[in-house]
Length: 303
Image (cartoon, rainbow, N blue to C red; front, side, top):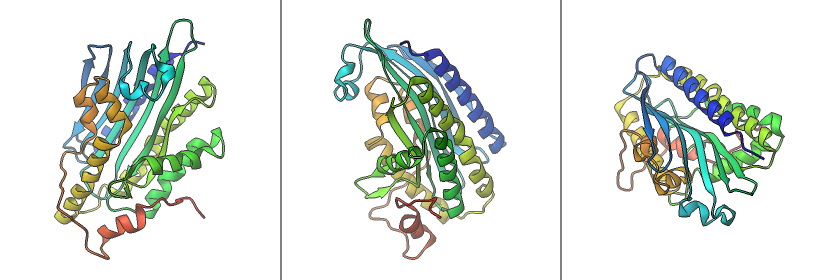
C-alpha cells in the first residue's frame, strides 16, 4: 500500500486557505501575513499570523509538512515499530485569541503521520480535533459547539463522538490545576482503525466542521461590550492556556523535539497573559461561574 500523501497535502493547503479567508472576513480589519519557511532537515510550511484586528487580538493558521530519516526520541520510544523508518508529518494547526473576552479562544488541528521503510508496509495514522476555551461562557454556545462536533462524527458511527469527546476532556486537562482548559470538543490521535480512505474522510469532516462550529459563536458575541476587569480576567485565564501548551501539549513537544520551527510552534501562545499569586475570582461572580459551572466534564447534548 502506498499512502496518498499528495491528496492529503492538497486538502490541508485548501483548508488553510478557506479558514484564513473566513476569519479575515469576520474580522473585517486585519489580514493574515504569510511566512513561508523551509526546514533544513527536510520540509517546510506556511505560517500565517493575524493580529491587532477588530476581532482577533492574535491568531495563526499554520500548515507544515516535515520529513526526515530519524524520529525524535519522544516518538520512537513509545512506538518501537517506527525504528529505522523515515517519517513524514503534515497538518494544519490553528489558534485564535479574540480581543473581546466574551468571544472564546478556539483551537483546531488536523494532521497525518506516516513512517515508511523499504520492503515494509507503511505505518500511518491521523490525529486532530477542535476545542473551545471560553472566558464568559454561554450554554447555547457550548451546546452549538458540541452539536457540530457530534454531527461531523455521526456518519462514522454512533460511538465516535462520545469516544472522542471523552478523549478531549481527558487530554485538555491541567493536572496541576485539577481543571479542564475549556469546554472540550473532539480529540483523536493514532487513528487508523478504519481503512485509509475512511480515515481521511473523517479527517476532512472534522477539518471542515471547525468554521461551522466557531463562526456562529463569534457572530453572537463579538459586539458585546466589555470592561477592563473582564479583560484582566481573560488574561488570567489565558495563563492556563500557556501552562497547558508548554507542559502537556504533545504537538508542541513533538515540534520542539523534532527540530521544528520555534516561531511557528509557539504561535499558539496568547499575546497578553497575567498570573497573580493565589489569585481567585470573587465567590458568586460571573468569573467564578466559569470554573464552577462550565469547566466540568459535562454532557452538553443531554436532553
